[in-house]
Length: 292
Image (cartoon, rainbow, N blue to C red):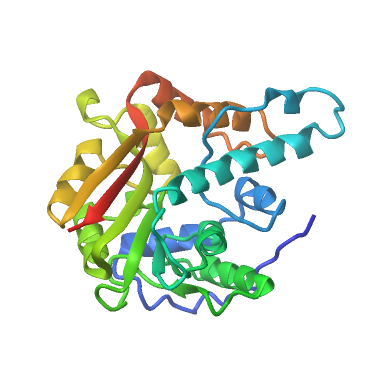
């Protein structure tokens, strides 16, 4: 098992792409974040994710030799989060090695690296966290793929990348940090015609009404603003993105949260997610759309 330490960055080093005080708070949060639930899991195969898992749990990991239960539980959680990333990438079946794709809100780079390994394409990952961008860049260098997988300190609402550059763009649990109309306008600008956009995200159920207490607690925990489900489709329609697939992953992610609650890397937010999912006020969705 390897241990990753990120170099100290002086406090006076500013982020040139931040436009608002809220974005500053988000960047600060992720620059300081050292959560074992994100780091311990990635140490298994050097693929570091910042999203949750889907699929049935192998509950036998909690049985047997007590000395290996923790190791097996961590491995099972990582298997589930990797399955989530693969489920997202499955929506990009037409990607070829000469294509470029964009991972908007790339975190520590796990999904970007997986996309290159699967498709052979060039990948740009962007984040407003300098520490995340540096960490992900180091991961690409370790694999010798820095010429194909590049990570940038950029704002996904205004990347500066040329129009029509990308065959595919995705957000994996990062849309709740920005205005959807602004985000999808930028994505539509960057996508080539017939390019594919995919998001996996948590959203609150409009039929429930306003965000539930559990959803509000999640917002406060991650300093995000979870959107209503309908807002995704309204913002897509306004920006030439036509949904081609919608998958409710709520039931598929609940087992991950039940296992995480029993793990050594639980953060205390697990019961809130389970309450929100099982109570019906919160949904975990995949939406795929084509740019017309």
